[in-house]
Length: 79
Image (cartoon, rainbow, N blue to C red):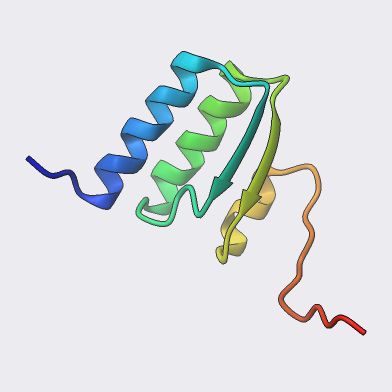
């Protein structure tokens, strides 16, 4: 049995809720989710793990509203 990307992301989300980490770093956590499921994901995360330190790497600007701070490095150049 193999799970789709969306199913894999949902399983990972359940594991986060069970383990309740203090720090969570996620890469494209909602890439396989629609906007409605993405909103539910972050709503539950903020409710169930309110004190978590969350770092998210994503190409999707739609998740910005779920974070207190956003660092946009799309046009970042190093000199």
